[in-house]
Length: 331
Picture 1: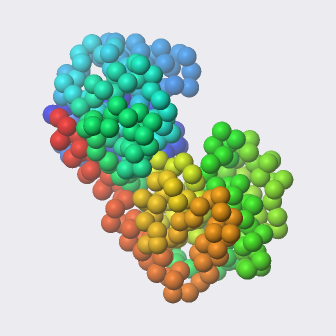
Picture 2: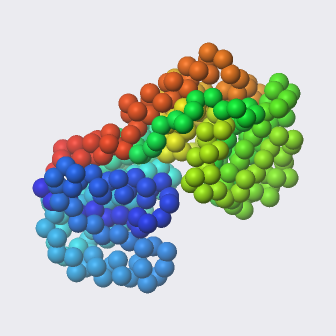
Picture 3: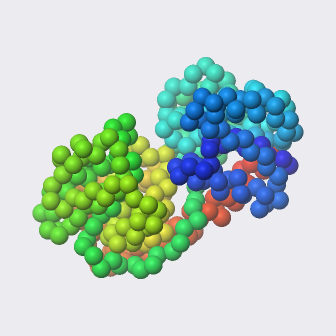
């Protein structure tokens, strides 16, 4: 079996790129040749180069693995069309009504892959014509080090990491900031640590109260340090297709606060490795945060379960195995 992989640029730091690199490595490790076509969508010239290479590529592949829905438009340009096609759906990019061309391209795929059951359910809700299409969920994974220590010695801090963009004002930053006075009423030394940048930051700073700290853009090393020093990770999002950062928290033995209506529940499995709350319910959010910030046997149990859940379901090796199995099955 030969695989042709259509990927976005893999030298970037985004989540799709991170698991894309693992996907590329999965096939040679399983003895399956893969040829990759990486698309640089950051410039007009990069797109033209990708189009030219697609038109000149003469790879007799058994199956094409399209790592982002937008790259399916390259399939008709291939000189030699693969025998079968698979498209991976990650979340927000497919949670909208598809265009005529997108529907046609996806309907030709032998199987559609998603990172979570939630991503598939929401996609089909919006595009019901795909309700009976072949589908398989391939839960993601990362290669992460284990916890350096279980309980931090610093203040009871909740950490959130991610872009603060007005266009992505669903991650839970605003809701955490607005709930923080209620948390401090119960835990006076509690701190909310916010790492990341974006055009939403000035708005959040204007809403902030004592105990809220902004760290700005941080390196991977600094992010890991903050994760190990915090008492819990909190991202009560309303729109995660998966949420790789939850894996980073769980591998560091940190329980997580997730939203109650997206894929965060699927990953963290509350109350196993943390709690879920409605981000719009400020009292419920504050109550969940207070539980996650307090040391004790409940916190210790969450911490142990978080590490176990990561190791049993969300390692890089586990993800690669699931992906290769799905591709073999479709081919």
